[in-house]
Image 1 (spheres, rainbow, N blue to C red):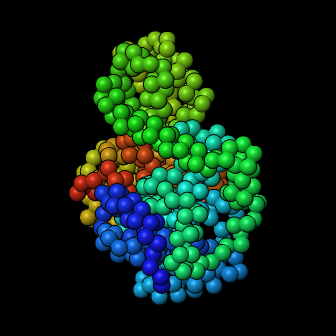
Image 2: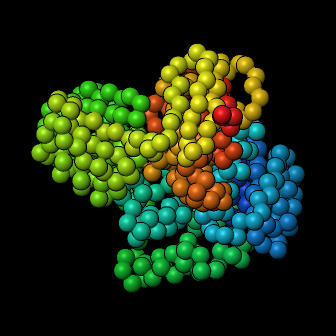
Image 3: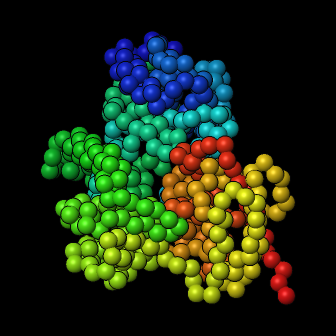
Length: 454
């Protein structure tokens, strides 16, 4: 192996040092497909001098989509043997449905590898060209500021992208300079895939016919959008304290006079943030309905927003209310950490819900909540419900579709949510990733079983 190119290695070392407060030290999982990008990333992490002490663990996800996939896994295994690095190969088959399904499965595999290695982060080889393609794809699909901010260097849960400031041409030059070999994926030339069409056809045409620096402009656009979103995120807690926000089970209220004194655009951002916190993000129509109501709201009046959220004026307070349970359903509320039980009725199905201290062993379908935000509620799914999975958030409606749950049975499935409406568990279907802000020694073990009724 030749000595690394000093220029790019120095820049990479500075990037990693600048992100050291996030990266820390200890185990690090590196996703390696065998392509140029991920192979260059692994080489930089393995051989760049002066990096923080990181115990590298390599993961290769074999989707089984190509006849050469087994060969690819063997090639990565040989690379890891040569560089004295541990490797885990995860095979995820049956993913021919769509690019999105394959992506979801890949991120789920990465999350499991990170947890198994006791690592905080999985390093991915996304670079500046990938960023430009992502921003363009999201922009033409009508994404807002958050969408066009593109990929972040760090993303929950546990994704790290240290190459976002490097262009593919730079990485290619580095890989050749240090004598790397890699695998070429022929599917990357298939323009039937959206990302390939953007990379192979659309961006080159933009740079040739419209703006020679289109890629750089898209990356700068992402940086500006991210700055705006980060600024808003930092200002929101202070703003919420000025509005005297109070949160309860499925409801968030705030001071009406202080809220109406805000500029209209700030009111809109607060409204979206509150509804996001309830687990029911607003679309454009819902946002417009809320803005019109707020401008002249009288006490005792209310309006239904999209997703089932209801906004009402109660004297000196505005109240945002999550949708109530379906008529005829009976939810079970878990008010605190003391042991208890209750009977839920969901779509005509009776379920016994029991809860105890998390240290107790129980039989049946169980789930442990660490650092619970009480009250917890076992109820049926509601419009707009989302769950945070290892690869991002997903609507329950879509999750049920992918899990082959028939429409008539969906209203009979129990959903565990916390005081903020965050979906924690759907027995037999999915568990949410741990919320980093839910800390502390308290834990509660919950089980849900079909109840026998007379």
